[in-house]
Image 1: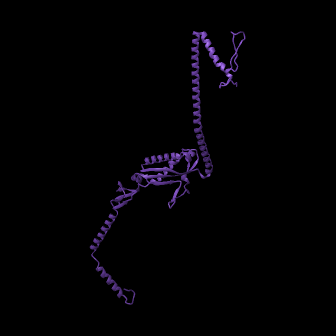
Image 2: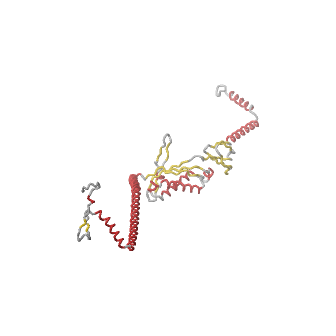
Image 3: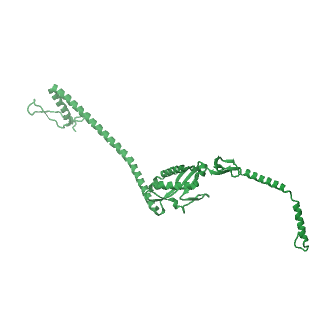
Length: 348
C-alpha cells in the first residue's frame, strides 16, 4: 500500500475500509479476558514453583524466617520454602573456618601467597606495658557455631569480631613487657588473648567460636630494629654462656660432691680405726695392769723381755755386761746378725 500518489483520496478510503474490516474480525472481549487470566495464573504458578525451592551448600546452613519470625535451620541439600516472600532464607557458612588478618593483607594465592603491609600500620603498631612500640601481625580464625545468633544478634558480625580482637590484643600486649612480646612469652600471650576474645564474644551471644589466635610476625619498629637486634644477639649470647656454665656446673659439682663424700667416708673410717685401736690398747693395758697387780715381779720381767725382743733386732752393735762374771766384764756375743742367710759365715 502506498500513500501520496496520484490516486488522491481513493487510497485513504481504501485504508479506512481495510482497518474497519479487521476490527470487525477481532475476537470477543470475554474470550480475551479468559485467555489473559489463564496466562496470568500460569505465570503465577511458574513463579511460585520457581521460588519454592532453594539449595543449601555443603558448608552452609539456612536460617528461615517466616513472616519475620524465626522458623528453623535447614541442612545442606535441596530445600522447600513458602514463596512470595513469606519465607526468607539466609545462607550462613558454618563448616568453613574463616580468617581475619590484622597488620597485613593477603594479596593473592596464585602459586605462592603474597602479602602487603602498606597502609595497615594503624593496626600493627601496639604499645607495650613498658611504653615501647611493637609491630605485630596476627590472624584470628573462627567458625560460626550458631547461624541464627550470627545473623540476627549483631548487625555487623565481622566488624564486631575485628574490633574485639584488636581491642583484646592491645589490652593484653599493653600489660606485657616488650621483651616478653618479642621473644619468650609470645605463645602464652596468644593463648590469653584467644580466651579473652572468646569470653567477650560469648557475652555478645554472637554464635562464634574462636579456633586460633596466632601471631604471624612480631618485630620492633623499623627505626629501632637494628638496636633491638643487637640487644637480642646479646641476650642469645647470655643464654649461651649460661648454658655453658650450667654444663660445667653439672660436670664439676657432682664430681666434687663425690670426692667430698669419699674423703668424709675415709676420714670416718680412719677415725673409727683409731678409736678401736685406742680402745683395744687401753683394754690390753688394763689387762696387763691386772696381771701386774697379781704377780708384779713376773709381770715386770716378762714386760722387760718382751721389750728387749722388740728393741734388740733393730740395733747393729749389742754389748752385754755380766755382773756375775765380775765388775765391768763384757759377755762375748756371737754376731749372728752379720752373717747372711746362706749360712756361709761371710759378713756383709
